[in-house]
Length: 256
Image (cartoon, rainbow, N blue to C red):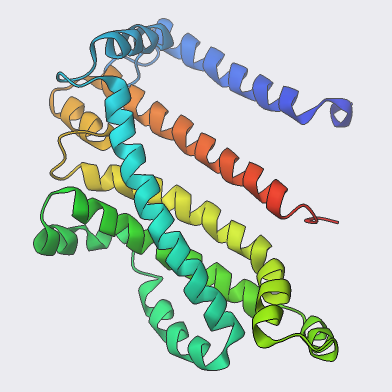
């Protein structure tokens, strides 16, 4: 029976059930407002923030501050990561150079670099963007390298048989073959970049969702904390959806 129900309907129903449970436990007094505000209280606070802003700064500006840092750092880091990763997957020598380096860096949580970034670059915008660049590069390079290295040898032999140059082989064989893995890396890199910028804003930021959450928590403004968290989730989900749309356009052969 459930197999005939469209997947979007199941997803919307699951969300509706969670919201209903949330409404019940908060309005029946099972959970106090200091632990979990009621949905109507959050909606009322959201309207207040949308109209008046937070600490003299419009809510849209808070969102734009976080989103701008994320997208700038992600674009720089992901672009560099894809180029280096493709080169490492295509060339055995370059791969031998970057593989041990990335194997060392990969297990280190991005937020572990925050003290170093603050120490060397201060509390300004540069440090936050550099942190995002490092995060995006770290996770983009690994998947791009794996995608390029996983190109079937038969494709490369066919390219040699057809007389393609090394550059033509790289652009027409290696890059298209690596695209699915590249987009997998971009999804992870973008999600982590968004999470890391919020963490970076907890230290020394005057604008951004991370700043808003941290400052509201210090003032015991619990509804604003929850609104900030919800906005982070919604924006992150939207960014992931945009990556998915781009993937369907560029990797139209996926799953066939």
